[in-house]
Image (cartoon, rainbow, N blue to C red; front, side):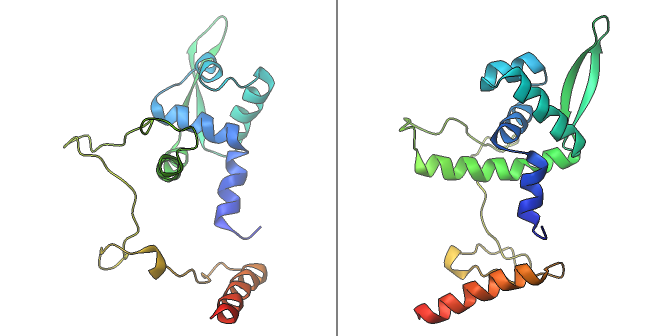
Amino acid sequence: MTCSIANVLDALGDRWGMLIVRDLALGLRRYDDFRQSTGVTHATLSSRLKTLEDNGLIERRLYQSRPDRYEYHLTPRGKDIGVVLMALAQVGDVWNLAELDGPPLKFVDARTGHAVRLALVDAESGEPLASPDLRVEAGLGADDLMHWRLEKTRSRRGDAQ
């Protein structure tokens, strides 16, 4: 599918893939730690680790021989998912579906200790952008189906106005 979002989701596999990447971003490295953190079955965990490795998001590193045991590490591509994790955390904090007393994770600037959050900014000016000011347009890689999606959205907005 000609869609960057679909391609990232394919690379992750499913929610288990995203949770494994979350755990790696938090510093977990070993198979048993992933099992304890997520509660995922052995078969599913093995499959998702293979998918993440095949898609270049993680790499295995031998840390013990006889028997061979591996740690997993995020690749630069896997680290790119960090911004997606932060976005999901911010949305999850607002939704608070588990009715928690506060956010389970806090993202902070390591230098200042100040909380950080993702925000939309104008790529040229750096000025903050309000959501209503955001418009999605076809990029150079858009195929006919992507153009159709965007046209369908534009025509509905025109009908509603």
